[in-house]
Image (cartoon, rainbow over all chains, first blue to last red; front, side, top):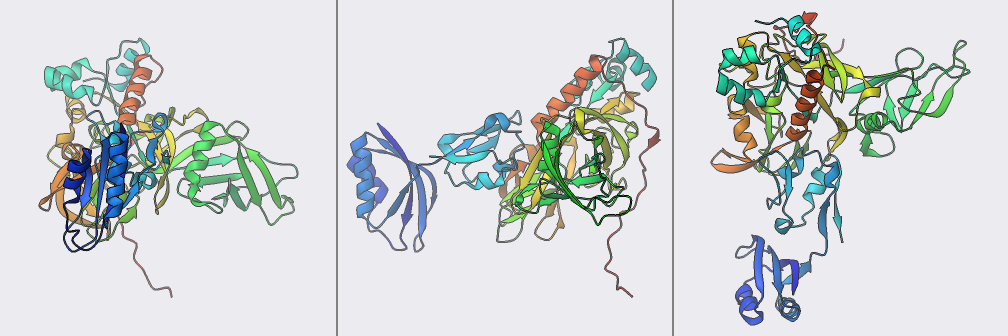
Length: 134
Length: 382
C-alpha cells in the first residue's frame, strides 16, 4: 500500500484525454482531489492524494509523466510545535484548504489530510513554530 | 449593593464567590441579574493578544568607571536611553539592527522574562562625571536594579476587524490579508475582554490592580488614544476603537506563558501581553455589564489596504463562527488574539482571588469619559 501527495501542472491546451478517469480505471488507484484550479485555455494545477498498491501508484505516476502533465511529489509535511502554540489563529487566516481551523473551544486544529503543504502558514505564524519536515 | 472593601473582607476570609466573564453569562441567565449580583462578588476577565504599544524600563546599575549611556542596544535591538545615565526603555516593536524583522524588542522582552542573559552594548560621549565611553556586557532580570513593564496602550476596549479590497495580498499587523476580501481577521477576547465587561469604566480606573503577564500589575493611566466617546450600542458597549489602558508591572515576576514575542510577516515585531482584570460586582448594573456575550458585542471592519472603515458591522459571535457573509460571498474569519489563553488568564485570576492571594483595589481616579482623538496635521514649517 502506498499513498502519495502530488501536485499536477496542466498545460494550457486540452489534453485530449480524461486523465483522471484513465488513472482510476487503468491502475485501480484511489484519486482524492484536495485542491483544483483548472479551466479550459489556461494553465492549471491540481493537488491530489493518490493511493493504491505500490505498483499501481508507481505506474499511475509514470503514466502522468507520459502525457503532457508534469507532476511534483510532496515529500514534505507541515510540522507544528504544538506545545508552544498559543492558539492565536493567525495561521488559519491564510490556510487555503481548511487544514488549519479553530475548533469550538478556540483551539487550533490541524487536519494533516487536508494540508496542501503550501507553506503559507509558516510565514503567517507570529511565533514561528511552524516548519516543514522531509 | 456591595463595596469593594466588603468584597475584600470576603476574599480575605476565603468566602468570596468568583466567576469568570464566561461563567457569569450562564449564572446570570439561570439566576437573573439581581440574584446573580447578590451571589457573585467578582467577575474575572482576560485577554492575550498582540499589543504593540508595550515596553520595559530598565535601570542597569552603574559600572566603574561610570557611563552616561547614549546609544544602547540589547541583543542588537536599540533601546531609548535619553533619560538619566543608566535608565533605558526597550519598546516591543523595535527591530534588530543585525537581524531585521526576524528579531526585535518583543523578543528581547520575552528573553528577559525567561530570565536569560541579554547582551547590553552602550556608547557615550564621555563626561567629567561619566568618563566611560563604551560598555559591553550581559544583563538579566536578576542583576539589574529595576525592570518593569510600562505599556502605554493595552487592552483596547474594541478593535475593528480587518480585510483587504485590493487584488494583491497585503501584510499587516492584523495578519496576512488575502486579495479581494479573501479573509477577515479580528483581535479580541470578546465576552472575556476586560473593558468590554466594564464598558463605562465604573470599576476599572487609575490604580486598579490587575493580572499582567503572570504578575500583579496596575492600571497606571488612561491608555494612549483612549477614546470613550466612540458610538455605543444599546448595552453600552462601544462598536469600534474606544477605551484603552496604560498598565505597569514588575517584569521579574512575569512568565513567558503570558508574555510572548510575535512576528507579523513583512510588518514587524509585536508582543502578546496577557492581561486579566477583576471586576467587583458592586451592584446589579455591573453584573448586567459582565453578563455581556459575544452576540451582543459589535465591531466595525476596516479595509487595511487604505485603512478605510467600511459600512458593515459584525458581532463577535459571527466572527468566531469561522466565516461570515460579506458582500455576497462567504468569507473566512480568523482570530489573532488567543481566546484559549485569555480564558486561562481569567481562570488563574479567579484562583488567586478565591485563594485570598489577590485583593481588589478601588480606583484612585476614574478613567476620563470625555476625550477627543486628534489627527496629526501636516503643517508647514516656518
